[in-house]
Structure formats: structure tokens, C-alpha cells
Image 1 (cartoon, rainbow, N blue to C red):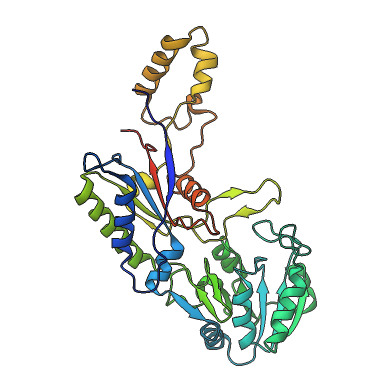
Image 2: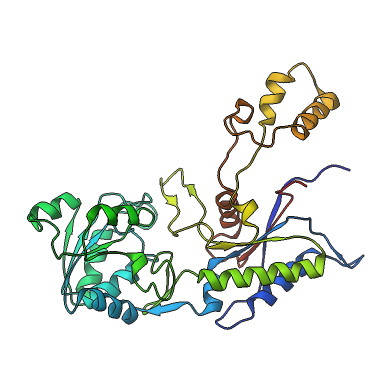
Length: 365
């Protein structure tokens, strides 16, 4: 029988609302997708991977906040009607515009530091996909909330023109998505916060990984502890029904870069906020490059003889190929990032209505 390789497919489920029993919904959706009606068994392999998009997890948890919630937290940190310096916001109508509204609602003046290109590759003016001029758009948002606004391109300009005597008591929000901790430590400013510090009591990542729900509501990233409980329950459900050990993950953005727009599609703080089987998910592939074997070591073989030789080479490979030339050309990224990228591409971010992804035969037994 011909061996089947990796298979990944999106699984549909009902629209999820706050309070829904997501563990039961995901379990039932997976079982329905793999049920073999003729035999009453389930066509699912051991170590199959189930991915659940963070969006439906956060919705089921009711992990939302309002613009007024953001404004309240800003006032609690900076006082009433402060001047706030916003460093390196991402250029996104979905990701940052609603956050900016909440910050501006609490501020007297906003100073935006907006380079020509943001952290993930979005351009500030005349965005190639949305045609938005983000400096104008963000200024309009601040003005509608009653805040005075100024825009600088570089942080050095702010330091020279507005803070020549040092940071002092300046109110700063570091909007970077991934290196905010290092930037905050280098600033050594008592009034410097990151987006992860705002509404941190609702989510360990604060406002990072959030998305607009409506004009006054924002959906936060899932709560990690609650999410882990959910994933463990789903894994146990599937184990009882199928007899197989299924890996279950919550996933957000993958880690891939668009070759046309140059945009790095990674606006979430992590690719996976929670997962079962960390001993697997936190490891990296240990693989040989098959085409290199075919073109070099076994270049004089062909047909079945070549296939058998390569199969034996794979079977007898070292358990740790790190640093070995045998693994050159492979992709030793963490499995959590590789899988999240695959899941993100399968489910998409639009109207495919497949927020669950099933991946089979990814991990060989």
C-alpha cells in the first residue's frame, strides 16, 4: 500500500459565542470529520495534531475589553490628561487602531513615533494592500477622541526636540510586538510601559495579540491557564474516543513573510499560547535531506533500490543531527512555529469558517 504523507485540512464548526462548551464542540467536530461510517472506527493516526485558532478560544472565554477599559487603565498608570509617547505602533486598522482610541481617550496629547515601515513590514503611507495613510489615519483617531497629536518618524527626534534633558517622568508606551522587554529595560524609565502591561489582569499578554471586535470592543488573546485546561480536556476526550494520543494546540499567527508586500505575518506575541505534549512541540525536526541523498550518496542508484537505500538511511539516522552536514538544507525551527504557520495558512483569516485544523502523519511513528 502506498504510504500517505502529511495531510492537513480545515474543520468547520458552529459559530462560537461566550460560554459555549468549546471542548465538546471541538471534540465532536474532529470525530465527525474522521469517523469511518462503514466500520464505526476513526481514521486518525497516533500523534495527529489538532489546532484551534486562538480567536474562538478567546471568544468562548469571553476575553473582551472595551475602549473605556483601556482608557481607565491608562489613567491609572499615567494620571488624568497626560502626554503619552507611543513608540513604534504597528500599522493596522484591525490590530492597533482601536487600541489607539482607548489610549487617546485618556490622554491630553499623543506623540506618535512612526517609522516609514513598522515592525512587521507595513508601510506608513499608501499601504500597498489597504491604500491607508496610517499617519493621517492615526491622527484622525486621536483628534476624534479629543487628544492633541504630533507625529515623529524617529525616537531620536523626540529625544532631541521634546526630551532634551532625558526621559525623566515622560509617559511612554512601547508598542513593539516582540522585543518590548529589551527596549523597556534599556530605557530604564519608571513611566515606561509596553502594550503587554495594559489590561494585564485580563490576559498575560495584555493588549498584545488583540483584535477589533466592534467600534467599542476589543478581543484579547486567550488566557493561557484557561486555554491549557481546555486543550487537556480535548486531548482526553479524543483519547477516550479513539484510543490515540492526539496533540492539541491553540494557534495564532504563523511566522511567514509575504513575498510581494514584504509583510511578516506575525502580529501575535507568540505563535501558540498553549499546547499539550510540550516535549514534542518545543523540539525541532531531526531530518535528513532526501534530495541530497539521492543526488550525492546514492547517485548511482535508482528505482526501488534507491528508495530502499534512502529508507534505511532515514531509519538508521542519528537521534541528534544538530551541527551535522547530513541535515543541511532542512528546517530546524521549533515545531510549534512550523505547525502554527501550517495551521494559519490552512484556516486563513477570512470567511473559510474552518477554525479547527487537523494534521495527520506529521510525526512519524
